[in-house]
Every structure is written in C-alpha cells, then in structure tokens.
Image (cartoon, rainbow, N blue to C red):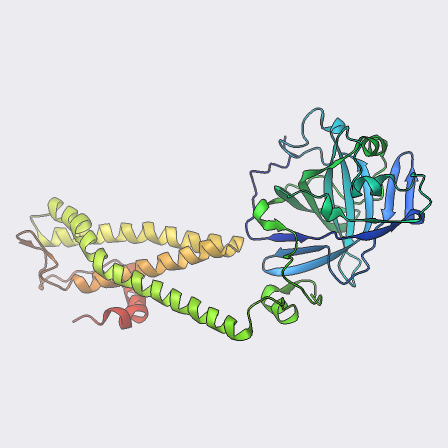
Length: 397
C-alpha cells in the first residue's frame, strides 16, 4: 500500500530521540470521559523535558501537556498494525507536547496492545481512574514503568488546517488489561488531535537511536529549542561528562588520528599507485601500440582521459550527494576520493619523466623528443595537485 509505513525503509541513523515519562499526578477533575472520548490534562510541572529530539545536530525539547486515548489510528505500520485484525488488537495513546515558551505542538503516539489480563499497571490506572470507585482525586502514574524498549520510531510532519506539527509513532506496544481494552474500544472521537496518519516524507529511527535518559547524567535544563549540540554543551554539562581540558585532549587526539590517516594514505599512494598503473594501464597501452611512440602516447592520453572521467564522476557524485542530503559520510568519502585521485595523478605526472619507470620489459616508452601531453583536465588537476601535495611528494626533477 502506498500509505504504509515500512519500517525497513527510510531508516535514519543520524537523528535521535530520548523519551522520559517519570511519575506524574493526574487529577480526576481534569479528565474528560464520555462514551466515545477519553482525554486528560497531563501537565509536566518539572524542569526536565519529556522528549529530546536531535535533528541535524540540533536538540529540541518538549514537555507533555495533554493525553488522549483512542481506538487504533495508525493502522498503516507494516508488519505491525496493517493486518485485517489490527483494530481488535491495538488501541492508541497520543500525548501532546509543547516546547517551553512556545505554542507549537508535537505528538507522541504509543500503541496499546489489548490483553485479557486482570493485572493493573500505571497505564491501566490512567485509563480507568475517572470511572474508578476510589475517593481520591489524584493518582500518580509513571509511564516509564510500562513503556517497553522500542524497536523503532516513525517520525513525520503533519499539517491540518495550516497547523504544523511533528509526530512520533513508537512501534513497540504497551500492554493494557481487559478493563482498559473494553474502555479504549469505545473511544472513537479523535477530533481534538490535529494530525494526519500518513506522510510519505517519513523517516524511521532504529532501536539504537531511541533511549531513556542516561541515569548517570544529571542535566541543568536550559536547552534553547533548536540550538546546536556543540552550543548546548555550554548550557548543559552532565556531571559525569569530561572536563574542558579532557575535551581539548580528545580534540587533539582526533586531529592526530586524522593526520596519521592522511600520512598513511599518502604513503600508500606513493608506494602502490605507480606500480599498479605501470603493470595495468602502461603495459596494456604498450601491448597495443608497440610499433610507434607517437601512437603509444596518443593511446595513453585516451586511457588517462577515460580514467579521469570515470573517477571524477564517482568523486563529484559522492560530494554532490553528500551536500544535497547533508550526509557527512558521503562528503568525507567524496573529498577523500578526490584527494586520492589528484595525488595519484600528480605522482604519475612525476613518474612519467622517469626513464626507468617508463621502461616496460626491454621496451623504453620514454622519448625525450616526443613530449607526452596529458588531457586538458589532467593538466588542471596536475596544477592543483602540485599545490596540494608538493610538501608530501616533492617537486619533479
């Protein structure tokens, strides 16, 4: 189906979501319960956020404000809720969140799995508290105690009547008992939740990108919504985090590691590229054009042009793809590959003036009277290579 969330596609390994629903009090007088509706005020009175979403390196925080219980809405999650009998297996809890100091809304959806159990947990207390015979007006509920470890989370943008929001759908359901099942199956009114149930631009967060807060870290909550992760480090410093000096040492170590990799790659290019080129491209050109030096050089120009075109397309495709999708891995590979191409061409440009290198077997392809003219693009890249790699490889003699 075209409107189905497929959990094995659109997987995003960069974004992260941290959820936290510790003990909170609900008020019986703030619960709206009709035969077809169940919703309540679910206010976060603490300074700790309930959702921290990391998108493109920036953190956004949200606090819960209301909770809604319904029959199954997201009946379009492949291999989870898209079966013919899904409506008899699942209900849904939708928690409305707002960023501090903002009216924008974010909705977090949890699937509710029906069971025939009579065991009561905090989620069952939350569902049945309004109609319970207890005289108490307040009840403490902790959703962290009933939310299982999540296998994935679908994230998408929703727009209803020009109201934009972000929706998180956690795909591992919370189990509820038989009494809660009976109550939820009566809930049909979803008019107060302005979300669509499908957006083709969705992403799927894998299990490793979904977590509770680290219990070993205590945060001072002064996260401005949308600030970068580096900037938030200056606002939120976990007690057990590394100190500034340790951060400097870590940065220095990373710099040294990158420099070591650069040196190893450069030495590898000097050591292996000339030999590979000689016994593949050079040998091939010599085999086909042994008779005349002019023919050999012409054939070499054609081969070099083809190699430049192929590897150049691969390199720039990676770079363009990385910029367009903001994929740091693709960018790193693209620029690394481009450096290797330029450095290899500069090495070969130098080696072509070496009579011993240009000798294959008993045949010397080097003729000082006939100057090898590389393709025009080769000349440009060779000039760039001279600037980029002069210190590493020395100047031609």
